[in-house]
Length: 353
Image (tube, rainbow, N blue to C red; front, side, top):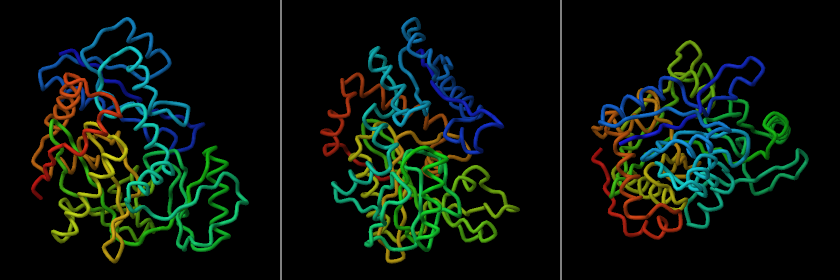
């Protein structure tokens, strides 16, 4: 098969904030996916997702696109590539326009979770600095940009314990990221993430636990931007310990996997997803967000770490995603609406952990 890998590459720009390109992929990730595609016996072309993408696919044929592009510019940027490919009727891996648009917006995602009876931390969206805080929200609170990924705009200072600090962080988000600030209750407990892969049936990967006990020096006991960017740096105190499978009892493990699967289907995710969950001290799982376009670095990304724990090597993961997409297109099941209706009939395989 002829497969086109579409991506946005990390760049260095001294005039941009340090986290500006953090959602984009490294050369290592792009090269690794391309090599995995070749190893599976396919031809692969590499194409940057820029303003020339529509013209490129008008003049270049491909059997399927492997999409990892985050898009540029707008609050719907992750939908940019799927929208173009849908217009041109070009098959692609992963979720479609609606799912990617919803998932990038944390507040909208949380509203969908609540409508599906999926627990998520209590929250409030701030469009202006001086809006009144909902008195039902309990400190500590965490302040985030509402429409960013890869922990952009999130550091140790974003966890606040009083209103003075809260409004300072809200103002920072509004000014630096030019978007609304999401304020939610900070859940004390375990940081967990759950990976899902689809290929005719749904495989829930072993749960990954990120333990921040060793991160006292940084004071960042959650997945901040620095934690993701400099993961493993002992000197900076950014050296969490990973447990996969997570240290959980069988019943709570089952519950968390069920919650992640429900979230996956609630947003209409296709082929893959990663759901970030905080497990409170009294063993209540709260969905923080759902990522239908998870990172695929072969060594550092959470999804690939979970897949490795399930006994899958890296080319297997890439081939699994491609095979799932091809199967969907052969059946004509490419739209969000169709896949949402299919969700309840999927066969669910919980990978041994």
